[in-house]
Length: 237
Ligand SMILES: C[S@@+](CC[C@H](N)C(=O)[O-])C[C@H]1O[C@@H](n2cnc3c(N)ncnc32)[C@H](O)[C@@H]1O
Image (cartoon, rainbow, N blue to C red; front, side):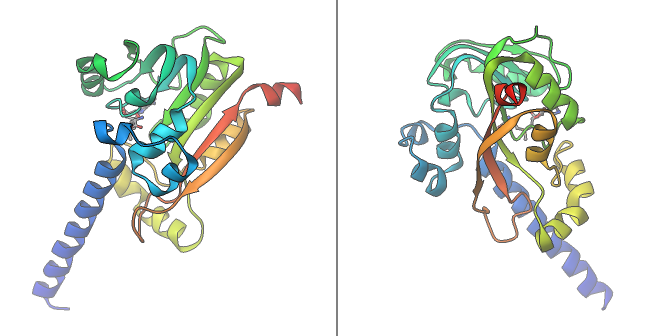
């Protein structure tokens, strides 16, 4: 291949990656628009709707004392409909500033706490619900984060997740090839985390696992899954 053709191919490949990156971050990491907030909270909204509709559906029945782990820019905040208390942990200072800047997005004022999920500064059994959306892909030690989250949940509490996880087959091969670069590009986000397995290994009973359709054919973050991990069933066993 000539030098010119090689450089054109590199340019086109860069354009594809940056296009995917924009599509991914626009699709999942932005806050809900007022319009999307009014989306009906039904299962069909989750599968045919926007990412905001998926979040709305997932979080519609989140009540009590809620911990949002790795809260990012606070995209979940408008979807907590009847929380009693909302605490957000976020290790990144810029994200925390973003969270603090828009307290009106949540039904109750959210407390923002600097912390990693692997070391939560809360007493055992402090929360009714922990929400982790697109967080297990980014934490340094998923097993430790799962165990910490389980520790701070009340016995009848639950962890609600929305996470992109490792695929199988050719998609997985692609994820393996891209993971290193992806993680550098996207602040330590990993494509190959087996989060459902991690939660089960930490003692959670995982249920209601649903796979969302890929955003586009070669979506490196597919499959994206939603699910609920209960703390109590594993203790009862
Ligand atoms: C892809 S963003 C997702 C943000 C948000 N949860 C959402 O659903 O849009 C990943 C977040 O995890 C945070 N994070 C990275 N390492 C973490 C850790 N060890 N513990 C908790 N959060 C972490 C990042 O700062 C970032 O805010």
